[in-house]
Length: 121
Figure (cartoon, one colour):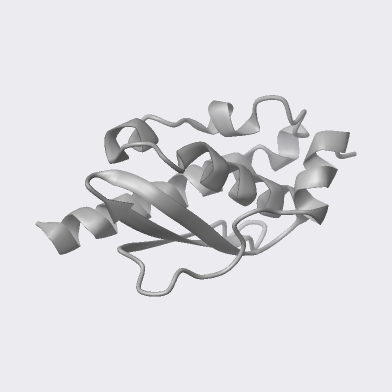
């Protein structure tokens, strides 16, 4: 059901855990499947210098969470906000019924950035 690349990300996810004193936290969930993702960001000079996640969900949700953190590290907030679910899922051959996992990652990211913007005015 899952591609080799997706299984690699699920078995060896990167950036798992919390960031001490994060600059932003965002949480997103999908009530239909029960997946929940929490994203932590460390931001300096408008750039995401670190990103970590905690995800309760299926293999695809964990893989997509890991992928989002990889894609945003080193990017400005503005570039990170332009990231789309298609960008996250690219190359993973996600089954159609699991595409929502890439959307979940984007939603957690957007909520984290909104959280940061509220904090920093």
